[in-house]
Length: 159
Image (cartoon, rainbow, N blue to C red; front, top):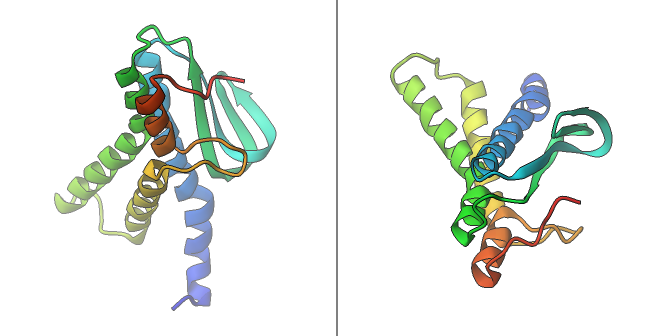
């Protein structure tokens, strides 16, 4: 049951944990794309742009979604594109495993904030790997993987 005492944790989840999970996910894409020599642009949030920090854009609604675009890979192979699209979910999964290990070894306390972080990370993995296109026609990671395997190339270059 959701009560008034849950409201502070709701705000922590929505404005701190979810953006961190998004940042971890996008960092996975960015790091693997850089490994393959790609030029990168990525964003946290939606709405009007607030600031640019190098290739990172932070938008007004920073707590909602994110994206990463790349082009000009040095290793322009199908497996490289698939690896880049999988990397976001893999980073989320690796962090889930690290957090659970640290809780099991009692380095971290078994606190609600860590459970919520793991919950949102699983949420991200699930919906990221589900193949679909959003209302703007942008593919999810799962759809991008499907397209790369089917057509042999990425269809989402930097604007």
